[in-house]
Image (tube, rainbow, N blue to C red; front, top):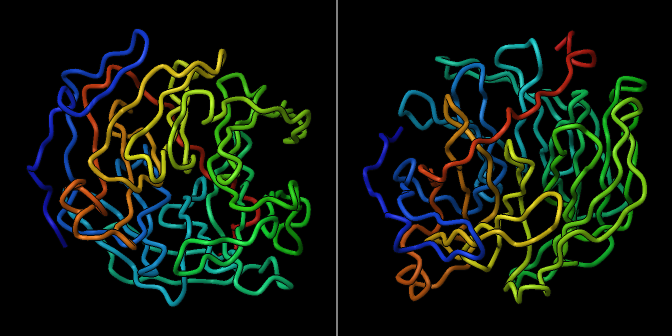
Length: 336
């Protein structure tokens, strides 16, 4: 358990802007003392004002609640945690390549994990990666191949899956096979677009999204890192109330702010951690940006250069608000 840190960096010293966006006056602070090996998957629970996230390498699901940081220790890599609608304390988690439920009530230390289904059985070494629920509450979750110590990942071994009510856990629908590192997901405000990241492509793709059938079509490149000479790759992603994207720049030490309509780079929000993994808006007013980072494989020299490496960070004063994260619909989970 850790108390809220007071370490604060003013972003007037850290922000590099492009165009009209100016982050001066914003600030960044560490949520807690704890250093994540592979922090990922932040989810702000607006119903209870709780921040959830995972440490994939340490096999932990965390919650930050009333200035307390608590975690559940699991037995394999856990890639995401998303609450279920209408079910207090019930979550869906990606555990290895198994989709599981986690029962973990607020103000309770006990937990229960139930395995639901497994994917990619013919691809040893694969694991779940990023996941989100759409406006219907359907879970979209992707996999990736085994990442070796040097960071190499075999191409084309991942799949983006969808969980719907038709078959529940009997089978997950493979929506996009042949991806390498299935990553960030976001939907625009009127649910006509789905943005998607397969990290090694160094692109954000956009699909037409049909909210009635919860289906995608007509994939197109939307924003390419090469356009603005962005280092590293895109990782996790979220969308704000203006319909603009905020993209974690892994190996780039920043969060990119990109127009959701014109695909223009609006700004680069510098982060004092090089390996930025994911982002979400949170806080009671949804005006704080939470950022997860990694310390895995970071040298002492890089720690000195990026002093908040491995920390979960809270950015305030950006002047924008997010939208509520979607929970997973209840139908398949009523008996758990």
